Image (cartoon, rainbow, N blue to C red):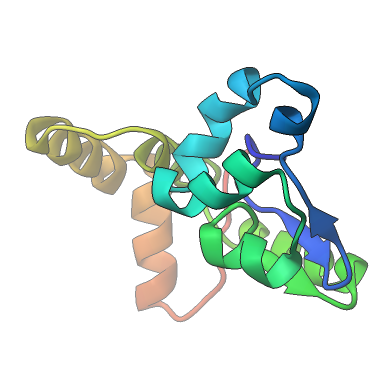
Length: 135
């Protein structure tokens, strides 16, 4: 779950990092979890092992969506994701996963704006039509 881009859970779900209660540390999961949540948001749940609700998980950044209708929310998100260009989505995921130098960001931006996908997206916007993404 912590390695997912979007995490949708039912509002009744609870979470806990209970490793300390059995004498171990949440070592392996800390890699992806720490990338999602700052250490200060994790300190209490990691150190106490206490359960927390979906609202707290959302606040700490562990999940992205809380809903009473998971299937409908996933469906809505899927439709919205399909509106984006495939290469643009992949590039955006790369932006979210690590820091980049300004030179890297500029090169990525130039590459995307001059790509077939970028040209199609800008033309569709100007023509007020849905883009036709190449697969």
